[in-house]
View: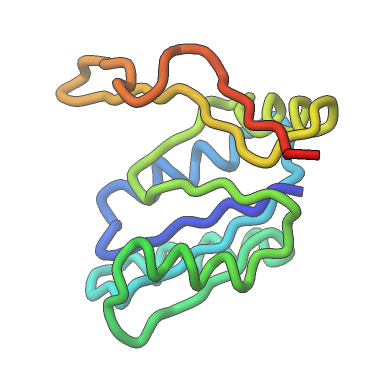
Length: 143
């Protein structure tokens, strides 16, 4: 199973798109760990509403003080139940078959880490990630 860790801080403008992309996944074999990083907007309320409909799939952790995205991810890792971790920002979305593709790769290849391409959308213009080419990169464990 994949644990999707999503740090949130005042994310109400974007969060519903992120949640919708998770609901649309063709493979639902994942859990979601939201880590609210002391938001002062309706972010935590939105997450709680989503959890009401998805009790078994969603965990909510709340930081009493702002610890930043890295601190929130680390907090999420401690609570994650999945064998694999996927970090997703609160303004990110996944294509509808992303988890399905990841689970197929995980099932067929011995890997420790997987990097994949990203698409940045600004003002309705799409830009391919400069970090990674449009090919998947596998990192195999050392034996």
